[in-house]
Length: 201
Image 1 (tube, rainbow, N blue to C red):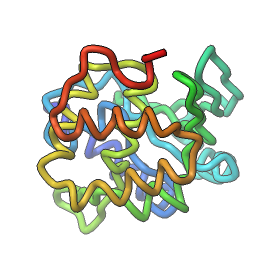
Image 2: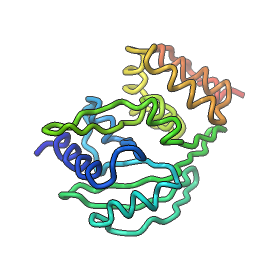
Image 3: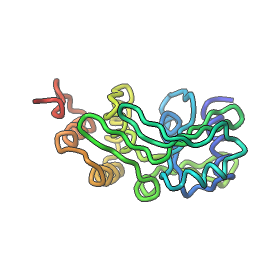
Image 4: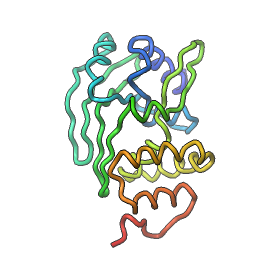
């Protein structure tokens, strides 16, 4: 079974157990479902903090631990983990990243789901929500993962009319300085500055 099939089977099990209205797929698994040639180590699903308990209860038969708060130098969230047919799942609730002078907090039901990409699961009438590329762009810019930023920006550039509204909505809802917004658009339009504006003194 290839990576796409394994991810799809795990997501179908999650959708059957927990419905589809409170979570979205993100990270490398979400990018894989969009066609990027990645091999995810796990499947990240995001939810709002208030939905962690109900989703964990729905997925309890697959649980390997209990939800716990997690704080690192730049991330804050509540994490719980599951295993479905050998696929490792990480539930990320109330995710926030603070880096490069920016603070970005996800709102799954309010922003990510309305702008999500719908992926139909094979041999089923089910579909799942995959985070908008605008989320992946912001997240990977803030964690300085240029290996992810470059292909994501290229995908967005091919259909700006579709992706710009999501990016603008996420920026408006979060503390993203103007210099960073300009830098993000430079990447989307294929412009490269020797020193990004947000790093210039």
